[in-house]
Length: 121
Ligand SMILES: [Zn+2]
Image (cartoon, rainbow, N blue to C red; front, side):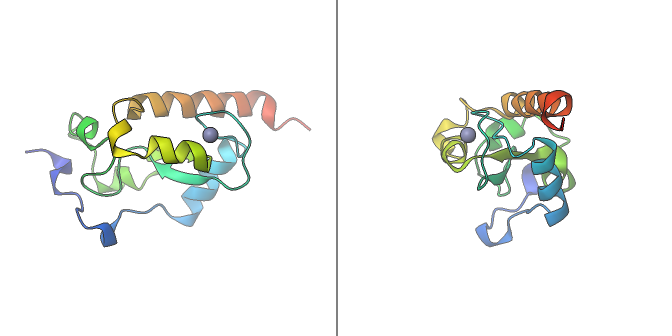
């Protein structure tokens, strides 16, 4: 039995991020899609580990027993993506291609880049 086995399995009861977190996560990468690294004005803040029980990367999430609802809705679990990347990354059948650990490292890379070069001027 794991901590995250009791996460919501109801589509209408998804674990969503607050507006504040959405704004911060987007701002920290300067609006650059964390996967394709292109600037996008109309992207989405996506869940790295899923908002609903059987969503993408739920299998991988089972390895991390400590992931709970607070973690799911925290900024650590959020990633800014363009719509095209979001479509690929949030497909259940692609969950082993776009792993959570990979998404986190891509996000970190964009954040570091933006920290160093993005906000100049
Ligand atoms: Zn993209």
